[in-house]
Length: 221
Ligand code: AMP
Image (cartoon, rainbow, N blue to C red):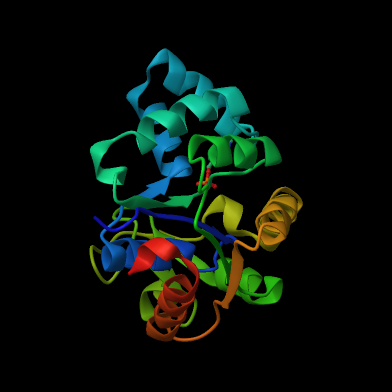
C-alpha cells in the first residue's frame, strides 16, 4: 500500500483555499478535514460542548489546544484518514504543530502548502463579495445578481455579509498573519513548507499545487 499522504494547507481568508482543498482531496482520494467546519457542526448540534465552542467562535477566540487535541486525534483515527488527509485550519498554534508532529511520528506531516494571495487582492475579493440571504449563492460586484441585489438562482435578496467590510477583513487578515506566520516558519525550518501562487485561473493553481505535492511528498505517488 502506498504511504499515507498527510498534508496541511494555509491560506488567507479569500485566497480560494476551500476551492483548492476540495479539488486536492478529490485528486488524491483523501478527506479534506477543516477544523472550522467540524467545530461549526458541533456548535449546530446545540450540545454542551457545541455551545462552549460556539461561544468561543462567536467571540473570535481560539478553542484551547487541549480540546483541539481530542478533536483532531479522533478525526484522524477515522478509517477514511488511513490513506492520508488534507488538514485545513489546523494547526493554528505552535503547540498544535508540536502535537500533530508527535501524533504522526515518526514521519510527521509530509508537506504544508501555503496558497499565497497578496493582501490587497483578497481585500478586494472579499469586499466585493455578495451573498444570497436565502440560498447562500455567492456573487461579486459586477455580476448581475450582486448589482441588482436579486439572486438569479432563487430570487432571494443578495447582500453583503456584515463581516465582509474592509475594516473587518483587514482585522481578520492581521489575526491570520499573526497566528500563521510562526507556523509557516515552523514547517519551513523543517523543509516542509511550499508556497504556491494563488493568483490566476483555478485550474492552473490546482495544477501547480499537485506538481508541488508530487515533487515534495513521499506519499503522493
Ligand atoms: P475557520 O473556519 O478555520 O476560520 O475556523 C473558525 C473558528 O473555529 C476559528 O475562529 C476558531 O474559533 C475555531 N477554530 C478552528 N480551527 C481551530 C484550531 N485549530 N484551533 C483553535 N480554534 C480553531
